[in-house]
Length: 117
Image (tube, rainbow, N blue to C red; front, top):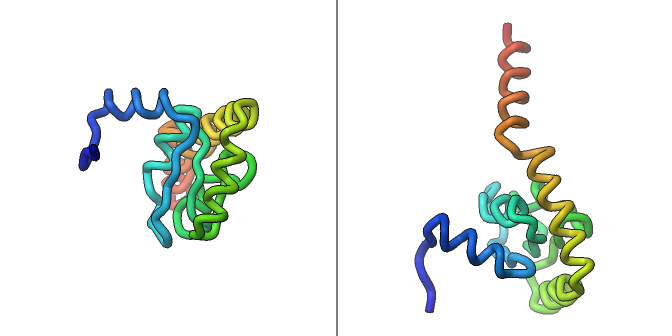
């Protein structure tokens, strides 16, 4: 049973219930899905290409993999260790706060605008 999209409440419930999020697009643009997962304290396993290379810190907030079943399986196996998944998730949430929060974007935008003056 698959839904084409989720409500905010459904997404929050799914993220609260999962151990990690698997993000499989290759050469994807920035992508909001990894950030949503990380903001909920979940590590992300994604392809080592495109936007996830900017948001995910390999081995610290999740895992960046070549798009093969073996690489994804190995990364997901590491996430099944609860202390590892918890530590990755905590770091993932902090990464979103430090690098991608509204406050961070606002400060960067203000800095760019001031530099233009």
